[in-house]
Amino acid sequence: MEKSEIKSFTLAQLKHLMGAPESEHINDEYLVGHGEATLEIFRYPFRIDAFMIGICTGGEAVISTNLSRYKLEENTLFVIGPNNIIQQHEQQRLSSYIIALSRAFMQRIHIDLKKMMPLLLRIAEQPVLRITDEQSRMLGQYIVSIEAELRKPATLFTQEIVGGLISVALYKIGDLFHQHFDRPEETPGIKDRADEYFKRFMLLLGEHYKEQRAVGFYARELCITPKYLTTVIKRVSGRSASEWIDSYVILEAKTLLKYSDMSIQEIAYYLNFPNQSFFGSYFKRNAGLSPSRYKAQ
Image (cartoon, rainbow, N blue to C red; front, side, top):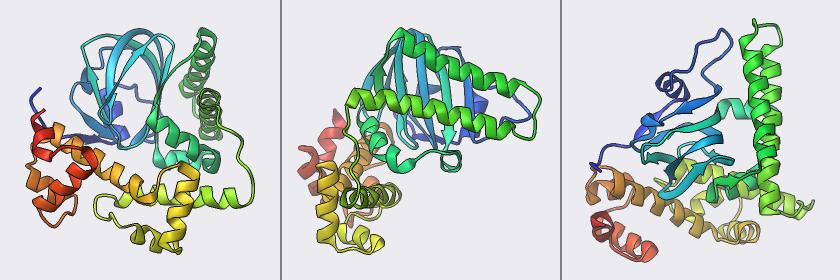
């Protein structure tokens, strides 16, 4: 495949590309619908600043997100977070229900992000889940209910009703992943504080990993010591803060090497390394091979 720049879309642009119908109370913060498509717009890698959720009801397709490939087919559920790189492989048709939600909308509706954040981090590592016929029908009914509300004339509480239905659908989807992962219940006290630091660290990391690789930076932003941050992150996630930082940087570097036209030197400067040599040593230490060898694969 010829390399091209990784495109970034807003939710409004994605809705236009997918041909979503206009409605007096559908705004640019969410997209809800169902149907069959070839996913032609996903042929080349792109990012979208939104959460994408799909319930596949027929057909099949192969997609990749953050360099890992997954097969979508009947009775599969997928969740892809904001700014993950998405690409569809093999031109096949897929029937699915789709929900796409902006960050702003997610923050505004009644979702307990403290409970959801650890689950979302695990979903990011395993975004595709096989579900049963009954579960697929149940989730589809929620989408149909939301679509039915959106087809009605707007009322004083339309946005609140739609937001409530979407919240319920998200909790149902989260519950299915939770059952699959069999995550133990959260315990109060110290564990709660550790989870809060972990959530804030991951949010900071998502914003600053391209410029900041020092644990001390994130510790200062959180007003704690680097040693305490390292201890907390390791306790909650099983990985150290520096391992999380390295994984974000290396994933971005691999993506740019694989998909973009940027030179290795340009990537080094883009990721705030002082020079190409320093970047090469860092990449080889974490990825096991040099940037040039990875790029040539």
